[in-house]
Image 1 (cartoon, one colour):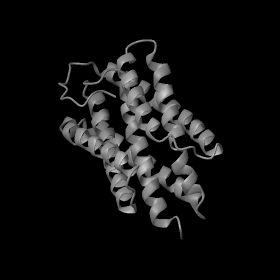
Image 2 (cartoon, helix red, strand yellow):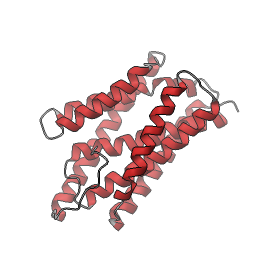
Image 3 (cartoon, rainbow, N blue to C red):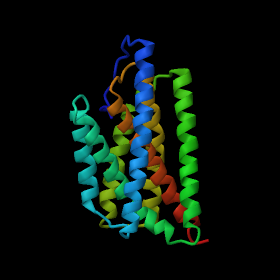
Length: 220
């Protein structure tokens, strides 16, 4: 995932852009599958809550991926990050699975995320629209959600959880648009950074939707 600065479009050949897209989606599929495995392991372990280690691990691994994306360590760090993020979903998945219709809610969140990701990706690739203007929103949004997440450790309310979930969904959609736009416009030519950017968008969208669905229908 590239940093949220304004990036000027480069004169990148269409063949190279298509190659970056293919590599991005191939790696994305593998990382999502790997995350599903680590999430399943976490659920089988009872969904251990990592607390502040979740935030520290996420920020540290994001930084590591960004620094190693152009080296042989880029791929291992990418799988380490996505595996860790999948594992960190364990508490949420376990909580939802404890409800009467938990399996259905997870499938519903997955389907909604898949449809949204497909629609956002197709729109951005077909129009080649510049979504770099979302940089400011992404910066503010991530600062807000990280701050709210820290506050939730000391003062948790259903309303705070709902707000965090809505913001997560919005950030996820914006990040998918922003990162995909950067690739199709030749602003991002590293498929590892592109993959991580799109992955984080999907992760935020799925976890946000699942939390909202769980709060709204988990007790029905």
